[in-house]
Length: 411
Ligand SMILES: Cc1ncc(COP(=O)(O)O)c(CNc2co[nH]c2=O)c1O
Image (cartoon, rainbow, N blue to C red; front, side, top):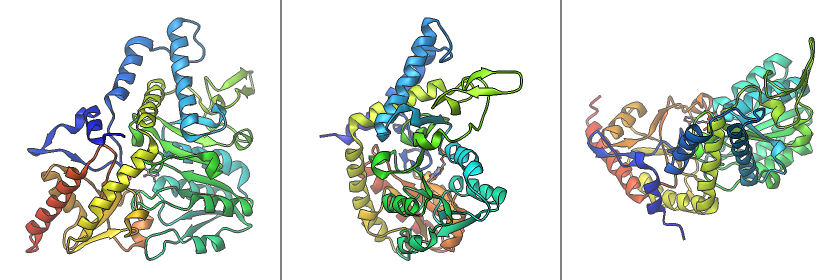
């Protein structure tokens, strides 16, 4: 049985004061904190193994290459990809989605085709498809959100049709905290001859993801949202699709032969990995996966659900506080967007910070969703497994104190 309170000791950053109050870090949907084991992996690489990968014939280069490719195997196992050739290192979710827009989209999307996303997508899963649709003369279409905060699956069955070339949906919304019905959407996409792309940024850190079980064609996520460093992420793709796709970037690492006027590419996954990669980041992401796997993704998911079960009713009990997304805790991950009547989200976040509570305020790179909800912005608290009920209590206390402070409409 995992003692989650003990895990906090792995995150020294959490034991600091902010504005003379203990830090309560609740901005994990933006980025998560890094355990000592991940920081040690970064330091160990630079202190002991630092060398470029794949071409060196000296000992450090061989060690660096082995650790780099061992991380790829750890990722393969973690998401249950068939083979490491299907695991591409990227800078993060945004890079992966952009690669797909350019490499898969430019080759396979034709004029008159349709690209389907939803109103709850992050900008990284909207703009690449806007750009593709504009480049190719295709049509971008949106799946609506129901009154109670779910993706409208009944509408999806109408929006996704024989003209659909790509469906690209977030596994979990970074605002509504809702888990989308990815398996059903994959089936709808495949029934209509479309590929299914999943933005997994808010899912992989928080729950077990099995890309073969989902039957997703592509799946993108970021290392920094799952205890790994920034600048490293993963794009998973089915081999049979990746084989048909041209690289996005060209240069060293990704070639077989460079002739005067043409070149040939290395096999997967290296075909897509031009230039010196983020070696330390990849190795440290492997360490993050070791750490998360030791805890267990099902345990993390259960524990975060316990936190949501604990905090949601306390939030719902605050008069004047509106929570966005499903109101039933079973349908909500630890991402909780809310507004306090009469207090601008930025003022709310600033007031919470004065109490040591770190939340995010703004549109969360989901401006179409804000417009859909007729909101200028929201505040957002997002939990991870190193948070606890005391953090939740501090959030509630700080919200009540902020409400008291602003109650006479003091701006
Ligand atoms: C659903 C979703 N997709 C894509 C991204 C982009 O990930 P990146 O490439 O690692 O930046 C984010 C980052 N979301 C947030 C980043 O800061 N606050 C957020 O909610 C996200 O939440």
